[in-house]
Image (cartoon, each protein chain N blue to C red):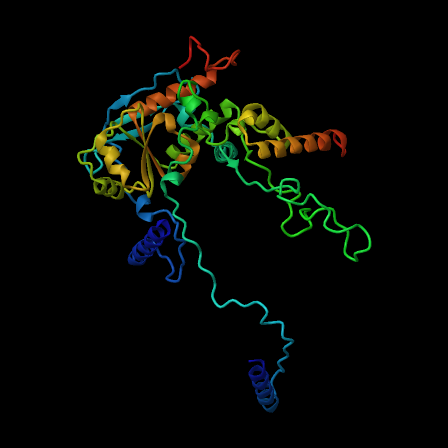
Length: 302
Length: 128
């Protein structure tokens, strides 16, 4: 399904490029475009006018280091299809403007894939295969090769000598600060690549999935959207709308993780989700090393 | 089939000899790999429920006040959840945690395997 949509996009891109031939893009006619190319219309979407003064709706709660300044992005609404900007929002640079370390992202992604993995591949050893207790024929004189049991690994139907044994787990934990840094780097790269959008609330007028798809296509956000809200109670309309959609998913902020951010092209955060994430992720910059596990009571947890 | 092929080849070689072009030599090795059609790529849906929701709640400790640990999310046998070890360590852990609930033949096989692995790791080889 995904591949079909991608080939359709590819054809659409080539049609648009062919139509803009006489314009500023002088591309050769026999140019072959890969089908997973980013939508060119997205690069051409008009940036919001720079002269309009938008109010700053939220400043950072935590103290920002003196040598850094907060990153800003626009706040949008989901209530109308056309993109009406409500204001600006300040984002903490230690969460949203962290230097990008792809190796940490890779480590965290591999950790997410492997720590849950339990391989249930199991083969029987020669002692576990039924039968094979008796010597098949006498040692000498029968003219056949000497054998001790019919279930030895060289026999057909015999046990496997060095095969997978039982449920095996690949569990390991990366240090907490590495996982936190992975989240920060993922958020920063989404913001830097223009794939992060901040929204005031998730209230949409209709529970119709088509409304969301129209909105996403009109605003040229991307192919797959991950919507994150703080708190457990999500509005019913958006839950109903995204239930039937495959590439648009809603998760609470506790469920945010690097793999989902890499899988979905666009990340949409609410203002409360931004506040929640900044609060949780900035605490690790200035915390003490745990004398006892964090699950036991502390006075100053975030 | 081979007769026809031979006749065709003879005919072709005759034609070629008359037209004075290059000779065709066949040793009969070309037709060993038979592929009547290139197999189709299997269609994988990259956006199933499982694939799109993979990894959600993996950071439940960091983002959720440390009330839960990611190892609580793992689905599997009790003696292997949140634990990693070689075969002997896994089997001894299984015997401790689940041994009294096991079936007799399975338990007997497991005990034999533990005995074998203990001797293997502690008495043979370079690392003991």
